[in-house]
Image (cartoon, rainbow, N blue to C red; front, side, top):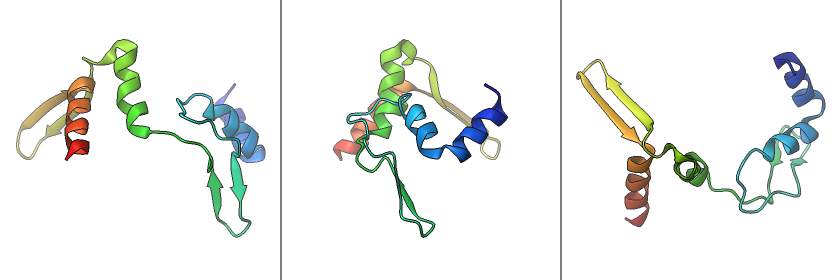
Length: 100
């Protein structure tokens, strides 16, 4: 499917498109209600779903064998500092912060 076809589907069949895309994520509870359009320019997406973005951003990568790959590359031309942080290291930092 081309980009234009995907885009058209996402705008013409919003709820069906995003329901299908939601299957790509690791939900703790998959949402039954994909879109709650309030009709006043505001909408709630996946309001009854339960997801943990930290889990998706870190734990899934570690579980898939990418724990030693870089999650963050910090490169400051102002200070000349270059730092590499792997998924495992970032996970440890997030856990320490969460425990605080």
